[in-house]
Amino acid sequence: MNKLITLIWQSVAFLAVMTMLTGVLYPGLIAGLGLVMGPSKDDIAMSIGPVVESPTYFIGRPSAVNGQPLPSGGSNLGPINAKLKTRIAELRDSLSKRFNVRPSDVPDDLVTMSASGIDPHISPQSARIQVGSVVKARGWPESWRGDVVDLIDRMTESPQYFMLGEYRVNVRKLNVALDQLPQQ
Image (cartoon, rainbow, N blue to C red):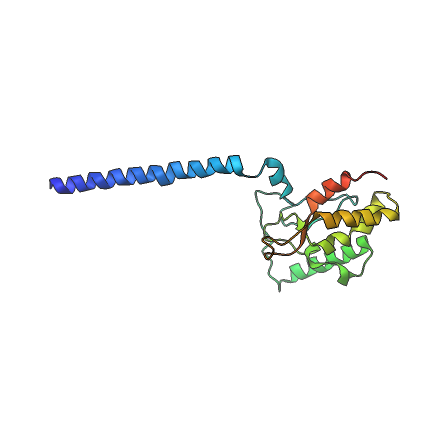
């Protein structure tokens, strides 16, 4: 009987030690490292896609959550859903008029939502298709188009680890850099 009580106390002590190690100390250490080594608040803000209404800025992907990070998520409409097809067709038509291109020239990432609803990235071709519209809305001369295209090229990020994903442009960072272009 004494052996059983000793075994129970050893088990309880082991459980308490492991609970402290794996439930308190380890999570605390990881959280502390995250605070010290993790991204700054500015970096986090730049990773949330903007909801842009002004024609003087580049637009990102549509969002089912209006760019809010807490209730992030997609629309949950499947690829054969009639509402989704109608929404994409209407958005494609609207953007083709805004950017003065054929509807078939509007890239898919400008008319489809990301799974999170807050993705700040668009393809380089989605950024380039907006150049004329942004330059015109800002009242800049046509000769500045090349400067804006150069800015897009500089802001284009490579696939992660050179193989995951596609070339992309962070719209929020692009719009900040656009405001910092020297007035020629």
